[in-house]
Image (cartoon, rainbow, N blue to C red):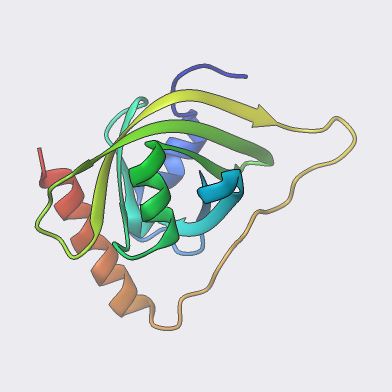
Length: 148
């Protein structure tokens, strides 16, 4: 366990509006107690500091339903050969966006490494239309930052 702050390497990856390929697993708990995994990119999350963040999800998604029901999630990503798991508490907020927006607070962060192996990568993606997607990401992230 690290502490109740967003790890600096994770925050660094979230800082860029066009960090293509960086993927975060958004883990929530579904009905019946089963884990649910959704994948998000830097286009759906911004960190304001090492404790506060804001994320956007599709309103009809299972992840959104789970977040509304529990107010909790874990963000998992691989950065610099470490697997970070960041537990967050979230609260929905009005945004005027077509996305559901949540304000979040880091509750706990963990780092996982193994002395006998190096984690080389996590889940990664390649955009089909980088210009269009990057433009949408910048607009969404700007809107998330400006909500106050």
